[in-house]
Image (tube, rainbow, N blue to C red):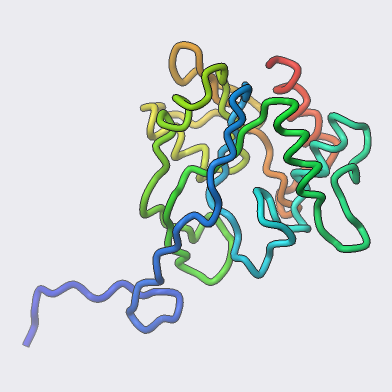
Length: 204
């Protein structure tokens, strides 16, 4: 007998069960002097971490980009012997420079067992304005991926996503910079990624 019951949505294991909801494992990093707030999508799975902080995957170049821009040395924050980043140095640097970090999702489902944004379902979006109320001198958001950019634009009613390397106005006193992804899977030379980040920091 035919019924109107919808078919169960297949999860990562293909058995019709939805993947478990993951809640964000890190607290927002919000220095009171922050002038820019970096918003990613969601951290990778813990098995990919080399430290308990943002951009924890040793294969991701975010902290190498920051090292190159601010110190002229892409390995400034790298502990090559331990194959990890120097978390204490990073935190001191971010507090000194006024750079904040969180993600656009507080809870997600991974529809496949990987870190790809394409298979990341946002269950609970971050209240971005609530974060900004804790950052009195912040007037810029930086995103480094399409999903994060799309979520920021959704919350501010922006229909057209800015192109990579450009910026757009979200509201009075707040701009969105869409930067190239620091993932090595993103097809852009390291030096060109650094140049895009440098332009944003120069303007701020």
